[in-house]
Image (cartoon, rainbow, N blue to C red):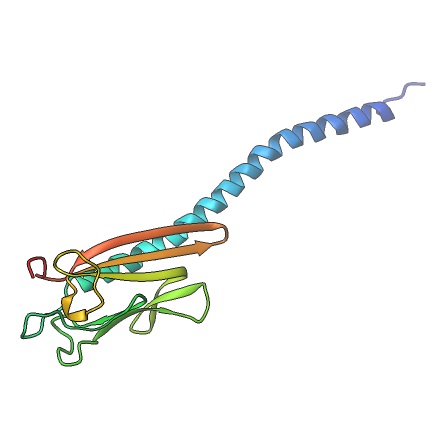
Amino acid sequence: MDNKGFTLIEMVMVITLLGIIGGIIALPLYQGATGWFEATTREGITESGRIAIERMMREIRNTARKADNTPCISTATPTTFSFSDASGNLTTCNSITFSRAGAVAPYTVQRNGVDLANDVNSLAFTYYDNANVPTALAANVRRVGIEIVSTSGVETLRKYSEVYLSNMKGY
């Protein structure tokens, strides 16, 4: 009698070989997928913070000056910056406000109450006078440092930039 089927030992060997081959193929596929997800997460938090800083820099650069040549700034705290550009309210100097919103991290960065960036651990403004010394007086501000630290999952990224107020380098 001719047996055309596989023996139990042959089936076990085939299953074992397929398992080994599957394990060899699965590891690089898993590592590739994990790397792709990490890169996508990093890209998302990088873009969010970068766009927010670029927008803040562009608008802060256009800060208006009052008649006494001081910048039109109403609030200059570590987490809030309110000022007016030439088209804004030069009396109250608070046409544009960048701030951190939320009671606990992750926060959002907002412009006049509208979100610019999400998943923010910290937003910090540092103000410098004409001698490049940190200052707390809004009338003395000539340069602003902006730092945003963003987190998503296990990824944490720091973005930092500085901007001179319009026509204020020599004052």
